[in-house]
Image (tube, rainbow over all chains, first blue to last red; front, side, top):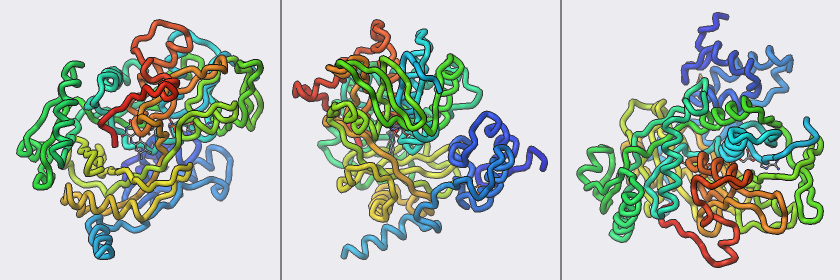
Length: 93
Length: 382
Ligand SMILES: Cc1cc2nc3c(=O)[nH]c(=O)nc-3n(C[C@H](O)[C@H](O)[C@H](O)COP(=O)(O)OP(=O)(O)OC[C@H]3O[C@@H](n4cnc5c(N)ncnc54)[C@H](O)[C@@H]3O)c2cc1C
Ligand code: FES
């Protein structure tokens, strides 16, 4: 794959940036995520997560199944804040 | 892993990394930092990224000014190959009661005496600065254009890399499980990967600091408390400054990437080490934002997370050595504003440990102030 390939479209991160971090010793998904914002976009890593794990696996010789992915936290779907507020107020009445 | 070190620092958040760098820069050798997870995995990595000079006490004004001036030049000073992403786009502090507004006015006098360029702004001007602000519910505001935010991961990474270049060794995924004391002095630390002999231990473990101190029979007057935060989908730039309110209980900024990050305090938070996310926070946050900045209420939440505040009785940190245990130092109790004080933490602790003349007089933040009943109360904290 070309090194200028964008791996994370949400946060605009290239394969080159990922490989550079891995070569500097940042070999967990969490560290790479926090330094590049990969996986922090609206899709929450659904598109890019596996690609990053594959790069880490290739560089460290671990299997993808053994690598940890970030926690999936609520809310899993993008809900608008004012709708949450309205719902909450309804329950208070 | 080394079996001997001159100084062992526990915790590699902004505090531990800044202390390590400042020690090494002043010529200390044989420094080891032990981190149970990865660098910046604690509260620093979960924080709101804000820094401000709008404080209500002279000490905090001076310390935050020192930090701000450091941040302004940090890429150069730390010779960072990345960018700490400093943005001095201001803090707009909003008040919704006359009492709070009066406090802002008092604070500004203290800030001006320290040379901080803050000012009161009218509600009209506040609306010019942040057009989507609902000023109908406000009584006034204060503003400082030199406040702002910077990337906590990158800032910690910059300190970490600079410290490493100066010879500091970092052991990640290594947990301190014991601290050895003999005849009232530190002799070493025990970890899950082996023991290290040392005469100096610095406790920079934040949320875990009081637990570590207990290992050597020291009761620090601290507790840890979960604080939650959320982020929205990214949108076009529409808000420059951080908007912060103590009484309305809110802080919210738009990141350089366009998403909004916001948090608030919750009086009902459990006092333990849990950092799960709650639906209750999401509801309270949504209601607050919908009332104060309705346009942001139209955005979708993409993620929510939490970190620990390490709370002290007066909401101020402790920078000290512990009486009765020679060689045991603590830098903790930041009560929710330890990221922005990182440069001060490193400087104060390094000078204290090396016995150098202090650049900043932080004696007010000594541990014994609680026993003396000499608390140092800062009026302006969330
Ligand atoms: C939601 C939220 C928002 C915040 N917003 C802001 C803000 O806008 N501005 C601001 O200035 N501050 C903010 N804060 C506060 C700030 O995050 C903290 O005060 C600061 O990061 C503390 O840094 P630290 O290095 O002392 O602690 P941490 O970053 O928590 O580092 C402590 C480290 O010690 C390690 N550790 C603990 N126990 C052990 C052990 N036994 N062995 C080895 N390692 C150990 C931990 O893994 C951790 O990495 C916020 C905090 C939260 C939770
Ligand atoms: S592609 Fe990476 S977060 Fe969406």
